[in-house]
Amino acid sequence: MTEKKESRLSDISTIREILGRHGFTFSRALGQNFLINPSVCPRMAELCGADEDTGVLEIGPGIGVLTQELAKRAKKVAAVELDQRLLPVLAETLAEYPNCRVIQGDVMKLDLHQLIAEEFPGMKVAVCANLPYYITSPVIMKLLEEKLPIAALTVMVQKEAAERICAQPGTRACGAVSAAVQYYAQPEILFQVSRGSFMPAPNVDSAVIQLKVRETPPVALKSEKGFFQLIKAAFGQRRKTALNAVSAGLGLPKAQVAGAMEQAGVPQNARAEQMTLDMLAAFSNALADSKEKEA
Image 1 (cartoon, rainbow, N blue to C red):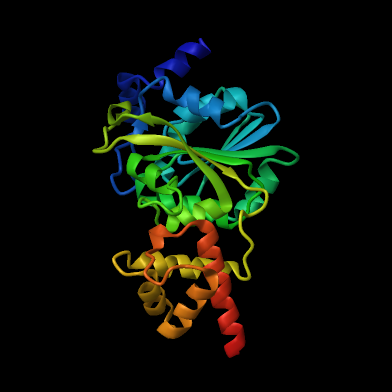
Image 2: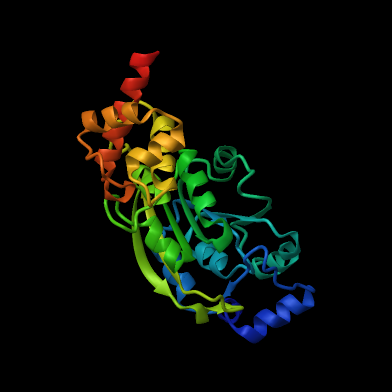
């Protein structure tokens, strides 16, 4: 009986029947697209590393298709849902899973350190989610910047976002988010998901990515804050050279920025996307040196 209920959750007519019974309508503002491809969620749940020793944090469970698959494998699942209208739907679809807890709230405002400590004591912790497109980068950066005790993030995002997030520094596809992600994690695209796998179907394809959180950063920095300010400035005006973009973005004299680039061994005509993570770190450290000398 349980198997039938689980498999039916990716059936369009079943979804419509459940949502209709609860008077639910899709919100475009919240980027709600529910998975109807029955093969995607089991694969995500397996690849995220959910097992009997693991607690899984899910963000945006929707109607609970992925949540069910996680609950079958993990010791506990805590699913954060912003839309209060989905709470009765989830109460129905997750009724058979006592190891699931749905938390109504905005993941961007929650104290995630406290949530993890309360929900997953003594467990390994993983994040697995089908993230709404409109808030992909902010959620990923919050999870990484807060240095939570998590091993990896396995998330579905828009295909273009996946390529951008996983781009290597020093390549044309790299942006500020790519460089920041590389500092905290090792990103990888696991598999692609077509737009027809969702209801309603979005206008773009998706991809599942995994960010394995690094135990130690790959570069040594004099100032993390200064490093991320530099990245934001350097990639903020991509058509300009890094010299001009950083000078304008940080409000520093060109001579000071040029001196730091020379000290770091970065060519004066380099653009942000041409710099490796090591080069960006050296540039940031040299800039920190120049500020110390001025102080």
